[in-house]
Length: 308
Ligand SMILES: [Zn+2]
Image (cartoon, rainbow, N blue to C red):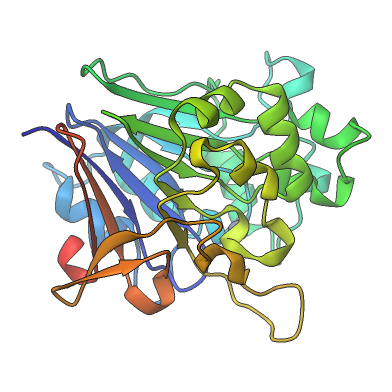
């Protein structure tokens, strides 16, 4: 039976995900990494091995939701081994509509090493189209949604301090009625704008979300009531938190609502070989996560190193 597999890796703090479409195409969504786990070294090179020493292998698509270090730690390692057919990242390449160009001065990172690598080594010479790779398997759709950087910088509804997060590319996987949503690091204001001004709103109404990779690592400051309100049924089945380092007693902690009945109906999850019903799972607790969407509409969520 055909499946679509979607992974969210435990990268300590940050986000790294992968999608294998029913036809076997690969889409990488963000490249966070930790000292214990690198999505390139410990996953991709095993599943998509390099056939000839020193050669790069093609894969269908790399999406860097936005140029923050916790979403591209393994970018160099990726670039040394793979060439993506589509390189999808907010960017400023010549030839693009000005409204889509990133203002790099508004991108803050602890250091510029990765941003410089992205701009000078990965993006240079490419005209990355902000489009989603196609897989024509019946019942499968992959889509991306984003706000133009110009809007994030100038729209009066949006705080400019949220600029770098609100330019995030949001990715939606649909297979035979099952939906996974990668929400990037969208802030509340940006998520509302995205729902109101792109086709995402209608998709949410029509098909809902089964597995939500929570916006901005599940932090309180990004909990979007608008997102849940728009979803068919008003809740997801399971909320997935890819961790960021959190500071106690601040706004920077995972929002408890992700685990509440109002925001998740619950879904079976395989943890250490046992099937447990969960509303929210965190990578820091369960480790790596794989969501398997079956052709017949069934869904299986498995956690731990067995999914690698
Ligand atoms: Zn982040």
